[in-house]
Length: 116
Length: 111
Image 1 (cartoon, one colour):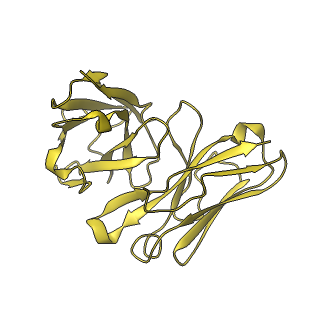
Image 2: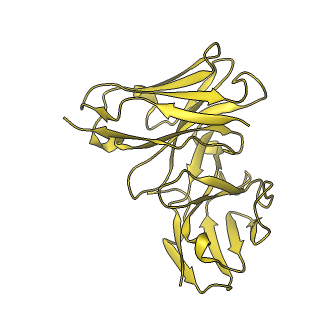
């Protein structure tokens, strides 16, 4: 069964770049017609869709983050990644990777704090 | 502020039924199917309902969803203490370059 696992630094300084990787196990990231997706959740708040990538490399981003966001995929490593530049405290959140359509499988989430 | 509107909280006694609403617009719920997610404290969201009213395998039939116009509802019958969680609705918004929208979440308390 497919599982997702986020990894990356838990602390990022303001103005720097937040980089996270999601590793897909139990199946190939290239199989099926899935969009590999990032979602985040600030503490005590709701879910925010960040963006997604298809195995072809085609991406869709949340307009509110588009200018700072890059999502990439490495099919050889069965991973996809998120880079969010010029971070501020407002980017502090739990970051989840998941797949769509359906958001049927989620990673456990990784907490990222933006602080000096 | 979330584009999809949910009540911040609902509550009911064990064994009772509760309904959680999700209100949107013609460009999101009015056009696209709705999913519902359950988030237990400290865990990742879990899909409960997809395509308005379909349950993934393993989800009890106590959970049901429906959609009418620009609103959707999640019904939970036979409430159990283990149902205490945050519930989110989600759908696509055609007016914003295929962005996924979520409701602000509803905290269910089983009294």
